[in-house]
Image (cartoon, rainbow, N blue to C red):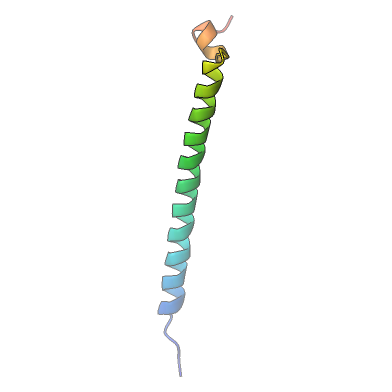
Length: 58
């Protein structure tokens, strides 16, 4: 009996979709975490170097 290649195609699409969703979710969660950390640091009075100099270099 010859097996259809549909199993391999669907599993490849499934693995690809799962990987894409995982990378997107991780990136979004990391962005939220870093924004919270930045807000916490700014609340403590710690400012970004770029904000202090206006973005200009001497």
